[in-house]
Length: 256
Image (cartoon, rainbow, N blue to C red; front, side, top):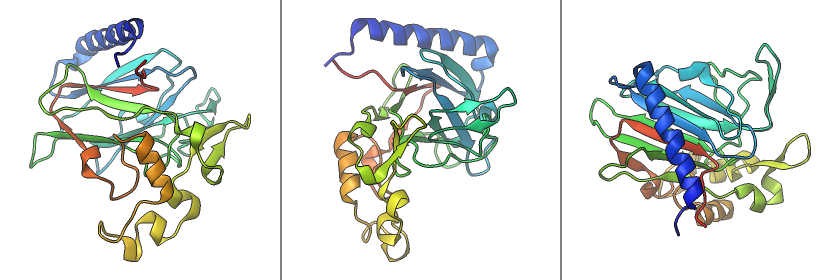
């Protein structure tokens, strides 16, 4: 079904403003622009990490209030991950903690990875062997907020990587992570909750033929079919594209 008209207009306006601002700041260069929008009813602290030796943009993290957006460039060929942190409390020096996704008790993660559970957006924006961009939303490290990533303006073969539903509302009690107020702030993966080679696809289970999804992975996949639910999930969850701009939305709009 269609996205409500007023919400669609809001998203279009946000993207246009981000594109205009990014172009004025040098967004017309050879880099790839990432536009992040917080569509949640609460603050989100995006965490960022460059992988495989790539730099970490924005010093690794920042704050996005409800309805706010941010746009910045990463170099062509950049590889990294983005995840939402929620329930954070930082002092004037950027020190504190988050209920989920924390990266060492600091606002600017600076190359540190986030603590699970967290919904992770993974991307490789071109390689020496291919100019194509690859991106996905992964629940392998658990879930804490709905997230989606899609190219701005579309493109040949491009799709949306997403887990748009709130898995916290159906998270099994054994996997729950609660915040200071006792609310469910995240849902751990079976690997993080129970450990062991069988659930983590390691050791004798460390291959596509030996590793099988747990009942919890099946639950995640049924609700979020466009996201990876375990280490050797269906490769159809991986998106291929070539675009100059991508929109990453926290709490993406849901069909009415």
